[in-house]
Amino acid sequence: MTRVALVTGSGAGIGAATARRLAADGMTVAVHSRSSREAGVALAEELGGTYYQADLADDEAAKGLVPRVLAEHGRLDVLVNNAGISRPVPHADLAGLTADDWRRLLDVKLLDGGLNLR
Image 1 (cartoon, rainbow, N blue to C red):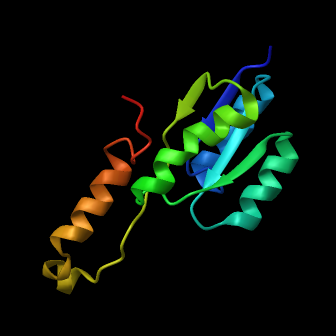
Image 2 (image 1 turned 180 degrees about the horizontal axis):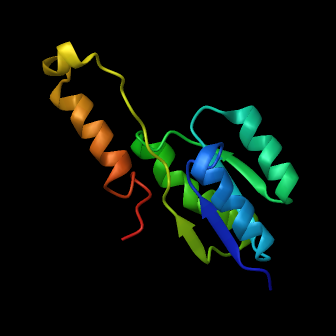
Image 3 (image 1 turned 135 degrees about the horizontal axis):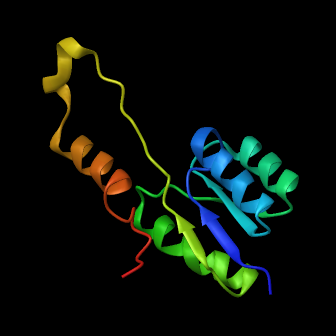
């Protein structure tokens, strides 16, 4: 049975390159993005995988991602938690970042992004 990999944030950049490598290694790849649906769908089609859209900063959306992959593929062997977000702030206004801004950045980048993998 083919192994299944989910690569979060794989609509472009490092995530897309990782998805391509895993597909080249024979895995079925679940491509994920928050907002670049067109690029994600195209990559999934290129790789013979599937595409999932979810905002990992949204707990409910994040908690639903892995179950959706499992429902479609019946298994998940590899998770590459590549997703990240940024909030451009002028250097002169770094104090303008709120506690909520920092929490959202840290949740998606450092925690499991709400994927509930524990």
